[in-house]
Length: 299
Length: 303
Image (cartoon, rainbow over all chains, first blue to last red; front, side):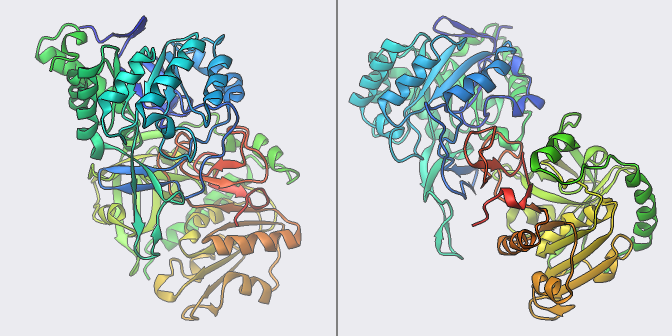
């Protein structure tokens, strides 16, 4: 039984990844998750300079989901290289670094700084709904996606994947723009913009007013968008959005995702990766699927 | 109110005093970093359990609060001021509920949590009965550093809960001041603390129990002093405690509360503003679940 998949030239031993932003740089969760069993570790967004993130409160629970407006708090690329990367390098798992920025120059600076580091893939976050400038501003227009992808692709030494926002009118156009810009893969979906009101205090729960909705509540939307994107492009897709079981993961694979990421469900149960992997293997045994590639994109 | 185990507590208090006299002493307060680096608070040798705990006992102790005893491995490593995440059985509630540890019985592997119903998650917990199981994660965060010097313990509302285990664990002289909105919302009677503290005071905003007023009124009226303060409670109270400690130039260890998601320092949902740049993030924020929930008051910005 083979669960390995390939993202371009990069081989992953498992199709399971953590979703960026929920896993920091892996150290905190390494007590509960065998990082070596993951397809790759996907880091939290890394920017050129340290970012403070948004004021508190930053999260709110909703029915089968949660809103977050962390605002990409991170210590910056230098700190990442000095403090986090050495830990990740000791692991067998591949390393995917998520990159965020407020301007194109910001993105390019991080991409260049990482060019000589042993990083396997760069995930370009052009879809964070929680910061005022940059982020999603690049990700809601096909022309912008094409331009930023082309510019980053020219500079990048590692393969790049573009992380798409679901907060768009037609996901197929966005996926095509990323492919035309030279992306090696696409990850989707980022969170959906939402809000929550405290009726007793008569104010918004999140200090940022809006946040990104994640969790099982968004799964049907994410699954449909992955399927739509799979019909529009030929590069590999990393599917995510509310995955909390082996069945969910298999649905995404069948819809056309080469690998899948788990985020919010990790907060519900830190042992979720092991549970999902076992469930996928059970499925493969039951239906005599020898290679996981045989179910990818079968719809 | 009903405390079936009071005599048991008294026996345990004598036993625990013996343990803690020989327990690793924290260095005299000189700097925040020194205490952190030299103490067991950094969590090396400590592992977090993700497990199914078994309910030993649950009871409603008054109109608002429930006391929940869990049989769990967490008891062997947990310390005063740490907390546990409890997971809802209902999968539509994704986030764990962080509850602070009230009491630890290492020998029997028991942890006591006291909580009130704040929403659907805690409402579900209130229906748990003996022998039921619940998914938990813990012990989480850094507890109170135990300093062997005259201490003032100040708890407001539910903030009194972690001070119970602290009062049992602290080796030196201690004075306890607890404040509540009213008698109906009180958790511990004044006398319950007698086995562990040298003096115990209680006050309520409406005067229905103990002195009328807040904890700072009691401290000022009775001219209570100490060389170290430990406190947990609502933000405005912690601000007043911080100011009071600064006026006396003594350290105050305060425990903060925040909405949390992962509980282990990965998601950055629960942060507080700090005076110094945090080494982890290079910004003026620290994680309440990881570096906290206990902080030195002068290090955090409560405004």
